[in-house]
Length: 519
Image (cartoon, rainbow, N blue to C red; front, side, top):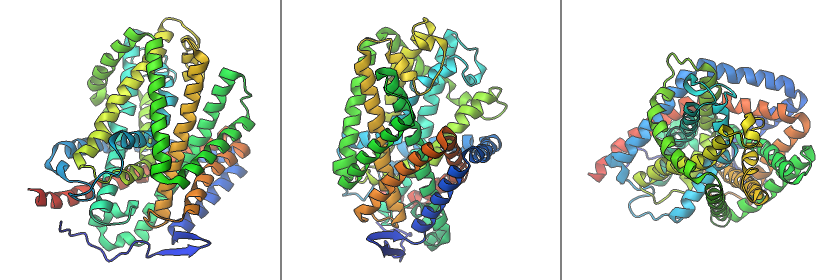
């Protein structure tokens, strides 16, 4: 296929070889220095760092809520258009390209990297939080009644449905298309070639890639630290193991060690196998709760969740004259900024594993199927939790006392509590491993100028660095330091929103040219 986007740039032409590493200059060096400066500054003054970064986060959310909301709505429309328009026939990698992974493994990997861990963390906590007015209620619905329960499920689905997956879909498709169909390096900057041409290999492209590295490493380190706290709380709740810093550091060390082994083994023998295990364990836990829990209530919840989601999607997507500002800013805009800040990592990983898929197949698997799976998942866990809360069963009847314990508090009122809780803890840990090693592969690709075969020590370096940052911040600054890191990650969502909008326009321009060859 002819293309107007040919370039003289050669893969790795700006790389330098140092101590067995093959790194892009200056992306690797500047990213590493900025990470070091940030970590040291946060460790020296965690409380002050949290105040400054919370201020940046709140300023971003309060002043640019319209941008996050309108951009996310646009991404949904854009992805749905790809799904139904003739461009959907285009195949990533060319007409003769074959998929590297079977559909089940492919879906397991994209789901594990995308939001698997979040579904474990929030499937119980979020519906209960909305139902009880823990931090605002969606559309100002009155709490603690049947209408509040229905709205809680609808709003939860809204935050985990089309919008976040559309954000990932835009980034993933753009990177896959320009890499596999245009022969450009698999880095964020490549998606902007139709807009700025050869300048993409200069300083502008360096800034884009550095922002992507920082957002990815900080987002993963934050999640690893918070996940260690959740796993530690779960171990304490179920087995009485001390919920202290030592346990949290041991969890981080264990997750990081397994992640290192996985990144060394690569995509096919590492991430793929762990993702498949994850999916199997998740199905087992899902089926158990469905059978052991209020089955009829869950079935009813699935229907009401889907209809409630579709009915309230437009009101919840609106940012004009919202009366539920506490919920709107504290939940929805926060989520959109978080998804966007994570999009470089998740999008690039999805791109890397998607060669050989048509654009329509890509969007169906990245946008539609995850929404259907999430409806089932949220209905099973959220529906069971709400049924307990409404009928004064267990700790959840008293509201949301601890986000990290909510899942275990729900399981505590079902049979075989200990076994189910062990399975949940295993899922949390393995989900973190898959996020860590897929993130390490992504960062390695960016900092090596788009190479997919960079030296193994580089992958190990980034996997270890994620765990080290999380452990160091927990040890030196505790929860305050982690929250500061999270706030900083959210603040990066603002520049990335602009980047993603331009990325979608760049992709549209390229596809508009190429579809002529398919007529």
